[in-house]
Amino acid sequence: MIAHRDRWSPTAADPAARSTPGEPDPWFGHHVPMRRNEEPVPGTRASRPWWEPAVIYQVYPRSFQDSDGDGTGDLPGITARLDYLAWLGIDAIWISPIFPSPMKDFGYDITDYCNVDPLFGTLADLDRLVAEAHSRDIRVLLDFVPNHTSDQHPWFRESRSSREHEMRDWYVWRDAASGGEPPNNWLAMFGGSAWAWDEPTRQYFYHAFLPEQPDLNWRNPAVRAAMHDVLRFWFRRGIDGFRIDVITHLLEDEAFRDNPPNAGFSPGEPTETGLRAVYTTDHPDLPRIVAEMRAVADEFHDRLLVGEVYLPVPRLVAYYGGGRGLHMPHNFQLITLPWDAGLIRTGVALST
Image (cartoon, rainbow, N blue to C red; front, side, top):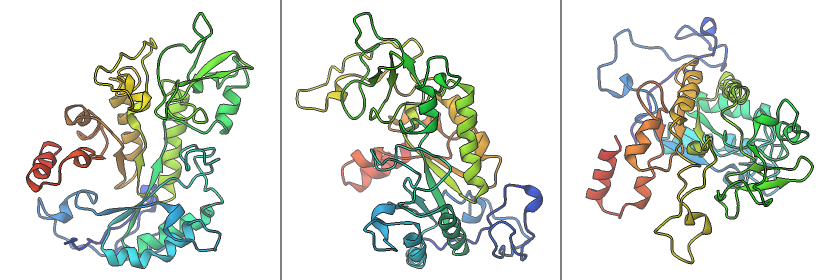
């Protein structure tokens, strides 16, 4: 059974602009529900963050609803189906990437973090979707893809234009090894070396995924500031939170040491599993990066950060909670558990 949704009031980024209950909200344009005077009873749904009891529904926009007959789902199509989603009893929708992209990786290769790909509609379409969703007490989450951009992003075009360019250090560049080969043995998640050669500047750049998805250098304060501003841009437009893509990949080993072999690797398995990603994922400095994102989210009211964290529970917990981490991680342990109620109950208990 899906629990009944509580009424809630989205809040503008500017505290001075917040509405009085019962008055029109200046940001979203609908009335803020009246609240009772008494405090919520501790432990009840009303006293908990909205996301703890929430049902969050993923929308893959390409296939959800096509509004204009071009064969691809779009934002107006999602808006047209909001009554159906409300009927399901959900509390929020998480929309997979909708940003401008060459679509080498279905939108996870982004050329502009602060816009909408024409394939899916316009910023105005997204604003309308958010307003219509909020009027139905449905919150809206977007995907945040901080690990890499498209190689067509203006940042990367500037970065690769010259070794002396001020944005060179926005990405991870390294000289070739002595024989001209890649700097180390790191492998991309989609197979092959994680290093791509750039002939004009005679260096390799790092890509944890496709060569068309160069990794940002999150050790660079300018990169972190720019990506924090991306979050603020969307929060100010009323977006209620983000699912953060591959957050464990944001930092690599500063010494660029080789990853060790995977003793459990068997022939026929994906080649990228032949190494243990000791120096390319789950870096000990990552909780600090997460804390900075959390601080940005906390500048706004009731915003949610969910992390894609593929790690065993003892390591996963470093990424969330305590007022400095993610509000929630994906619990991927559930995917690997047998379809047994007792085992699933135990898995949930270990993760909470």
